[in-house]
Length: 296
Image (cartoon, rainbow, N blue to C red; front, top):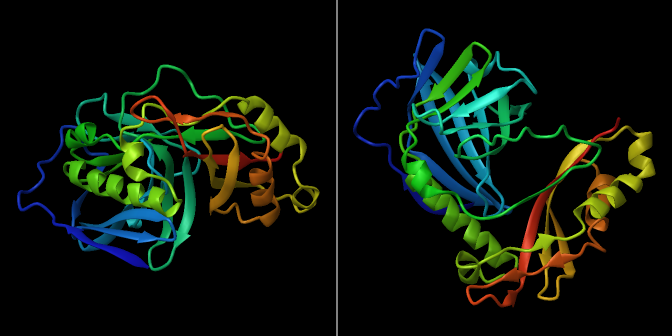
């Protein structure tokens, strides 16, 4: 593991009980500073929280510069949370600072069962409802974490039905700033100009997203069908100044080599509008995306 040599100290001022707290809210207090690490292209923030001597873990992950991030939470207070339930993330008493996030379950060494919340962001909820995932779904993300919005956060609360678990994080502005620096470093490892991307006026835009998704669907690998393999692939493609794809890198495997290869193959004939730098000129850039393979 490559450590970034930075520990964000916990504040010396206690976190006041939020207005959201009630009899159904479990409040977890910080028991460690934030720790940041970089390993195999993954930027990660982690912090331990406590409730009556029982430790809980909160992790925030990013693999590329984006407004979105993944949250993993583990500990005894999370044991009753459900997979694929209607899950809300709440970041402050201001009800605008909340996000919907799909919930998954996984096991973590030394921590046991954990809840994983994908594609979270600190923003007002979109009025438009999200479509259900199909056999394959292409999601493209870009930008950077909004440190101004993060400065308004007071906690990360995970809410399902009548249950709410609240991590008393305080402001996330400094931790998010560290993640932004880390993901800028990731761009450098891909051979891209991280500084130019900070002032880019646009990122690559997939012109034939529907055709690309359909192509992946039509060529669902026969071996994956026989073995009833499903999964989510996170990948990155390098987009040249003429809009062509020159490289494809699997950032997080689906667990199936056949599905991983199909995801990259689906982008061979993808057409992009290239990214634009601060002067509006085409520049070499990237598209990072998650593709979900799901059998009917």
